[in-house]
Image 1 (cartoon, rainbow, N blue to C red):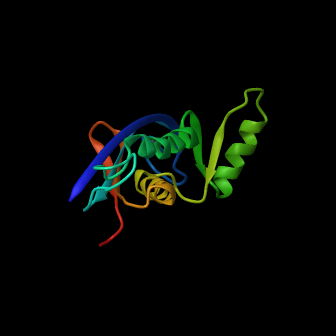
Image 2 (tube, rainbow, N blue to C red):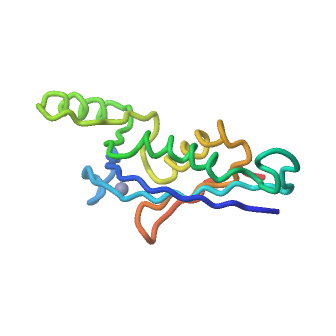
Length: 143
Ligand SMILES: [Zn+2]
């Protein structure tokens, strides 16, 4: 089997509603995302001959993830999250918030990222999302 690996980074802030401890505050991460694409056979014809997938095609999907999350404040769409957004709207600064249907942990974000990439790159194998250089979550579908 072949496994291709491609990586991007993005900077985001997130808010974990209901978290007790210092991460209960709004804070940011330099997220590092590694996507792995698998293939048992190489393409036999065309411009992608002898490839599992064109790296530039994978990069396009990763760019979409970058543009979705980069320099945004990620907030769960619950009562606390909506209240927070309403308070931010009352300030002169135009904050860019991303309201999501899940608690924006590394686990939920990696699952969401996997599913977004899978719409374009169907042979995605796994994604690994680093919140810090030493903490990451790997998401892949069960075999
Ligand atoms: Zn965090």
